[in-house]
Structures are given as C-alpha cells and as structure tokens.
Length: 151
Ligand SMILES: C[S@@+](CC[C@H](N)C(=O)[O-])C[C@H]1O[C@@H](n2cnc3c(N)ncnc32)[C@H](O)[C@@H]1O
Image (cartoon, rainbow, N blue to C red; front, side, top):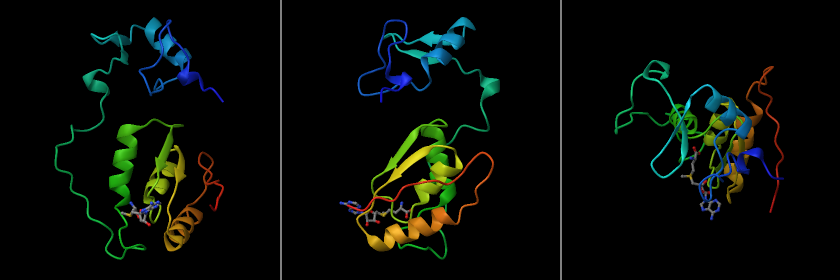
C-alpha cells in the first residue's frame, strides 16, 4: 500500500528513505496558512512558534530509573520510552522495536496512539510483552489490538 506520506508534494518527494511526517493535504493546509518554511536544501518544515512548545527544552542527561521489580531483566522505564517515542514520532506513525524484550516500547507506542511492531527471539520476553499489552485498559480512543506471529 502506498501511503500518502510517501507521495510527492509540490512536485518534490520526501527526503530519500523517509516519508513526509504529515499527509500532503495537511502540508498544503499549513502552507496556505503560512506555516511552512523551507530549509537551504529545499526541505519543507512546519514553523513552530516558541509559545507553542510544551515545557522546557530537555538537557543532554536524562534521569529515569528502571523499574525496581522488573518483569524482565532488562526492562526499561515506561516514561523514558514514552519520552523517546513522543519526541520522535507522531500519532498514527509506526514504531518498530526489533529487540522489544518485555514490550515497554510497545506499551509506550500504544499509549501514545502509534502503531507498532515488536520482535524478540526470546519466548519469555514475548510472554511478558503479551501480558503487559493484554493488561492495558482499552479506552474509547485506544483499543489494544494486535496479531501475534510466530516464526
Ligand atoms: C535489552 S533487551 C530489551 C529490553 C526492552 N527495552 C524492555 O524494556 O524490556 C534486548 C532484547 O533483545 C532480544 N534479542 C537479542 N538478540 C535478538 C535477535 N537476534 N533477534 C530478536 N531479538 C533479539 C533479547 O531476547 C532481549 O529481550
């Protein structure tokens, strides 16, 4: 399936190996509103005004503690993974964690309304990830639906 975000916009394609971060129809609307600026090498960006930014700029050192009683030996902090997923993707995007362990990234992606794919070679990891995903509450806006594929 060709997603709109891989199509041309204003006669140009998204940078090599990447999709537009928003649908071309949205880019068009932002352009009409004067909200698109062009980088020196011709890449469009949405203008974000200082008063639109949430919170403070993050520093280089992030402090998150891993869970005290982890479900999996290398389990990571959910807030850390939500921070990374939130900063690097938009709602509806696809998040791939090909070493997903206990599935914390998948839970973070699900909570932030991203699509996701998780892969792990360890059966105990998959079990923990499934347990975590299955115990997430479904809401009107976010239903946990996934397909488990065994290689
Ligand atoms: C550091 S852990 C990931 C932990 C995860 N971030 C969490 O919060 O639970 C790395 C995972 O990579 C998996 N792994 C290692 N080599 C792999 C491979 N070749 N293919 C798939 N999974 C692999 C391990 O089984 C392990 O669960």
